Length: 389
Image 1: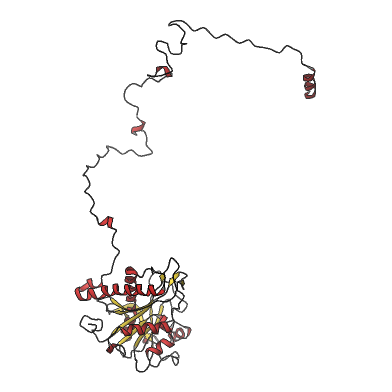
Image 2: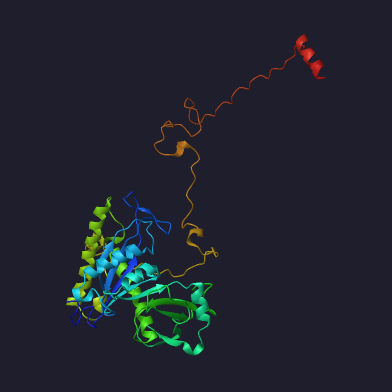
């Protein structure tokens, strides 16, 4: 089925992308350590078979590693490539028709030597770091050697050029037949340039052992490795966002379950869907409360619009500043005027004594006599007064 008309190897070549992914851990788990991004978790390597621009991709390998595993560990890349090749048909496990594509993490001597070993003869397209030697070689490339680069549609992209620098730097320590291709382009707005960039143009580089084809086609083929990031995003949505179990053996089983879910996402659209629907990705479903049908709301007419809208600073016509209609109500002067007051006596005028007869004036209270001290001061007080004087 891989070699069918709609399969990933319809054109006689199959592409395997290898990339690393950081899986965060929020609790103690086996092999969970600090990562190179100063986080905590695991650092597995995954491999996907690219289904081309019209499809997605299927997982073929997943290697669970500790969080402190290196990004460019050649032994881990070789093991992941072996697991991926074991999932392919026998006719595609060796030969130039199988392309191994990675980023700069796979640009190690041991990994490239393993890929190009006699008898295996696998094709590769790996990113390369711009070293000082490569930078000096780019400076020596004549202007006529640069050719326009292609965009994703296969047409010339303005502001981007590619060139080959195989004959300039020393590649004697690398596998025989390796080609080095450099791309320069105008950076997009907001992009930060590096010290190795040339004349405000951003430089990228990759290595390949493919002998035929134009440089722009080879560079576009390598740049399509970014589709692997889409597969990783789907893997996070289907269970790879975190590893729920503690033991490493249990989490390996969890990775296999995630791979099964990704297989369904890859082959179901290929067998049953056409067009852009083959590239649909999973999305998070809304909660069950949202899916339940809500009761219809009672239709209420909108409130009538006010006749005028006075400004907040102009309070002359504010409704709360207008006097109340009608005569003012009398104020209450004492508790006796209030109805049902327990402190009042029936038939007694307000402010009158309970024993006072109606119409009789209340007698004034007697005045208290004012006592003055006419006695002479004692000897003790005279002593105090003398001390103050």
